[in-house]
Length: 562
Ligand code: ARG
Image (cartoon, rainbow, N blue to C red; front, side, top):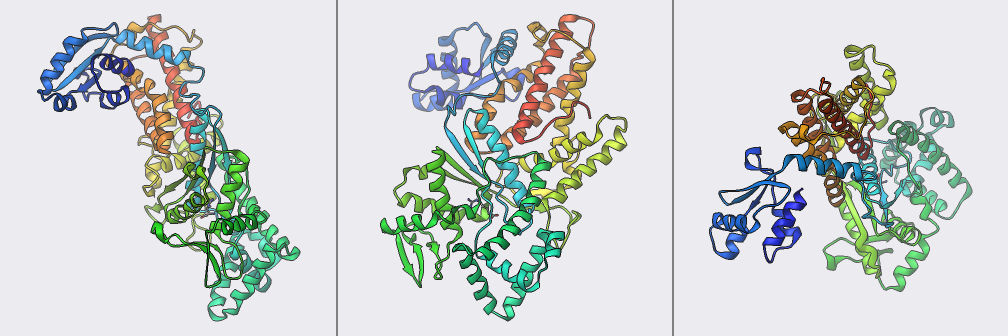
C-alpha cells in the first residue's frame, strides 16, 4: 500500500525518485490523520512556495485512486486515507500468494560467509562468546531468508603462543586426571598458574615459545597434547551449541591455516608489503593512521592477524563469497581494520566484502549469576539457570502444562537470546533476570506467550477453512493496525540484513505481539457469526505464523502451549 501511495506521488511529482519519495512518506501518529502522510516541506523549499500550497496543488493533481477513500491536506502534509477493505484484501493476498512470506530472492545464489562464535580453546565459553554465537546465528538466518547461500564458520581460537604456555604448565603442574575431570576450568587454572610463575621466572616464557615453535613445525608430542586440549574444549563448546540448537558448516579454526600461512607471507613479501622491524615482519600502516599489522614475531611464529589474512584468502578461493562477516566484540575493531587494509594493499578487490560486525559488552545487574571458579560467567551455566528459572515459573503458574521440560527449554533459552538481540548490537547488554524472564515486558517470553495464546484461540475454534476472509470484518482500528504490522514483515527482514541488526526483527516481534494482543482484546474471535469468526481466526493464524518466523530468525522456537 505504501508503494502504491509512492507510485501515485511519483506520477505527479517531477524530479524525485521512487526511493526518495518512499523515504519521505510517513505513517502519521494518529489514525485521524490518515494512513500515510507526505510532508511537502522539501518541495516547498525547491519551489519557494508555502508547504500547504504545494500540498493543495498536489491533491488536485492526483485527484483520486481506486485504493483510496480520500486525500486530505493538513498543514504542510498530504494525508492519504486508504480504502480499508481493499487494504485488507491486498495484504492478505500478498501474504497468501507468497511462497514463504518475508523471504526473497535478493541473494540469488551469492555466498556470504559468517565468522562467529569462535571461542578459544582451553578458555571458557563466556557470555561474550554467547553474544557472537547468538548474533551470528541470527544473521545467518536473516541472510538465508533473503536467498543467500550462507556459510557458518566457527573460527576456533586453537592456535597461538598461549598453547606453548599451556603445554609448559601442563607438564609442570597438571595431571591427566585433573584435566580429564575438570576440562576447561582445570586448563584455565594451570594457565593462570603459568602467568604467576612466569612473573618470578621469565625463562618459562622462552620454554613456552619453544613449544609453540615445535607445534608450528609439526612436532608430534606437542601436537598430540594440543589436540587433546582441543578435543576436551570442543566437547564443552558442543554442549553449549546443543543447548542452543545451533550448528556450523565449518569448524576450521586458526590451526587450519598453519600450513597455508607460509605462502601468504611469501606473497606479502613479493608484493613489497613486508618491513622488518626488530626482527619481526610487519606491514606498515602508518599512512593509514594505524599501528603496523604484525605478521611474524622475531622468533618466526605467526600471529592472530597472519591467520586471519590467510583464512580470508582461503575462504575467498573456496567459497567465492561476496561478503565475509566477522562477529566479535568491539575491542577487536582495530585488528580487523588493520588486516582488512592489508588485504586491500595486496590488491584483492574483494576486501570490500569484508565486514566487521562489532558488539558491546555483557554487564550484570547484580552479581547473582552462578559462577564456577573465580568470577567467570560460563554460557552453559547461564543457559541452564534460565531454563531452570522458567521451569519454576511454569510450576507455579501452570503446573498441568504438558511437556514442561521442552517448554522450559524453549522459553528459557529464548529469554536469553531475546535479551541479547533486543537492542542494537553495539549497546551493552544488561543481564537482569527479573526483566528478561518477565512474561509481560519487551521480552522473549512475552512474544512466545502471545504465540501460544494465538495457538490456543485457533485450537478452540477448531477446524475451519483457512482461506475464508470477509474483508469487511477487518476495517476496525485494531484489525487495521494488525494488518499494517503484517505488511511490514518483508521490509523488516530486509532492513535487518542491511544494518546487520537482528534487533530490527526482535523489535518487530514485540510490536506484532502487542498489536495482536490489542486485537485479541478488542475483537472477540470465537463468535457466532461465521464470517467474523472465520476471518478473525484466519488472521490470527497469519499472525501466529509470522511470530514463529520472526522468532526463528532470532534463533528461537515457540511452544504451542505455555
Ligand atoms: N577467538 C577470537 C576471540 O575469542 C575470536 C575470533 C574471531 N574471528 C576471527 N576471524 N578473528 O576473541
